[in-house]
Amino acid sequence: MEKTSINTIKELQIKQLIKEPNHPRKESGNLDSLLQSIKKDGIISPVTVVKVNENVYHVIDGYRRVEVAKKLGIETIYCIVFEGYDPATAAHQSFVLNNERAQLNEIEIALHIKKMKDTFGYSHTDLEIMGYGSKSSVSKKLNLLELPSKVQKMIVKGSLTKTHGENLLKLKDSKKIEKTAKLALSNDWSAKKTKSVVEKHNKKANQDKKSAQKIRVPKQEIPGVYFKDANDMSELPDESIGLIVTSPPYNVGMEFEKGVSFAEHLVNIEAVMAECSRVLVSGGTMGINVADILNFRGAAGKNTFSQIQPMAHIYQKMLRKHGVYLRDQIIWVKDSNPFTKDITVNYTEKTNHAEYRIVARHEPVLIFRKKGERSAPSEDIVLESKLTKEEWKMYAPSMWKIDRIRKFDGHPAMFPEELVSRLIKMYSYIGETVLDPFLGSGTTIKVARELGRDGVGYEKDTRYKETIMKKLGVAEKPLTEDVAAYSKKVLDELDANQPEKPEVEVMASEGMLETAEEIISDNQKELVTA
Image (cartoon, rainbow, N blue to C red; front, side, top):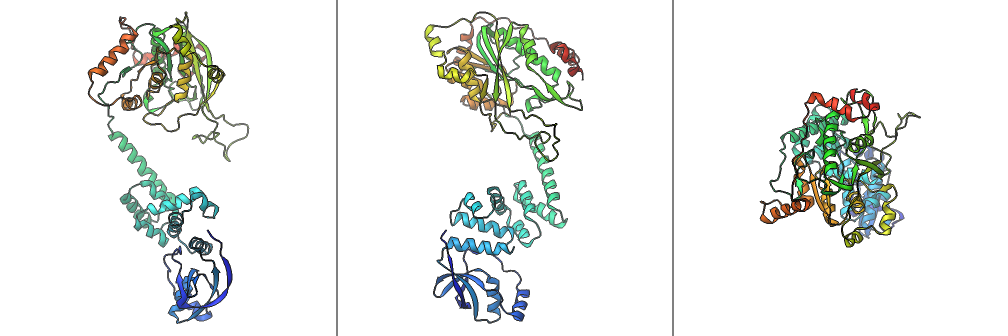
């Protein structure tokens, strides 16, 4: 943008004055009151122009006065003349002068900003520096141009406000936006009322969409993946798994936990841990990423107060009876953002001193080891599998700073590949089989295979089958002989002789609570019976 300088105040002929092509004001509005004022007192304030050449001047401010002068037959008018014409400068100054007097409506402002971006190439940052508002404010103003033209005209006329328009945009459908805008206009809805109506509509639409949506389960088989509950892993022989890496459900109301009580959750976890202990090799490791329940309201979820329910000791008790012991604990630091979605934790004007809550930005990874001696493969495999000194220096400290997954694609609770990669490198040999009994999106198998290990997993929720296929690169097609052969190879490598299918007790629902009480240590019983 080139700088212009004021040359002088000149008396110019009306016929020399043309409206600046990039002038932000699109409509002159009603000129009657201005006409009467000029008839009485004349033109008191000069108009502002930019010189194009000796015979042409672009009006950047005061063009309504020029229009009235033409109607009244006035032939000359005094003007503040800017030299050094530059289209971008003229456009910007025209906006500044008109906006200072609040003569622009929200749509005119949005159109002008679009012009500055599209025609003159200014970025959001440039516009913020030039005084058009913050980058988010600029984006909101531009978004108004996505409204249907009829609704834009309502804002131009002042029938609806900018905030009305921002709320209406959340409907994301032109016909719905127009219909709701008409309702807002005819019923004299405030912007707040309009927002409430839009939110209720969207919530209902989302509920209808979810209830109508059918979960598509591909028919394609996935080698090494079993779609069933891991409380029965009879496909796997005893002591056939070198490492288990998993993140069990936390029982915090995720979509795959709906309808499962805390007692039922513990019963299932204990059965899965028993199976994990069976299939794990002597001296083998389990890496279990499981967080405490931060807002626990009792086993029935009915307590009026919440508290933290620790989970590590529950897993420790379950596994200890199978000869699997807690050896180490890693603190996975996911980020350090102090703000959360929970407004009761965030710092606000209502936050009471001495009652601050700690924002959970970490999760533990519990490292269990099965008793017995770990058999080692060939010396070559051992050397190839061993960590480098640099890797050891990075992995050995108990605090791992690894960014959490911020965009969940196909599953609501994924752990990062880097977390899985470190555990596999540390606790398994190349060529061994790594198991994830709560497979989720398939991350553990993906990383295991990338690191030269075999991977197997169990996932009882078939709605994630398509996600697992995508992550593992399995095409959706009829089962071929090659894929079938690969599946057979995976099982053959585990063991040719399958053991008898273990008996898994299925308890009646009324017995769940009693079983859960046995799982939890005595000092925790009151939490379960609450």
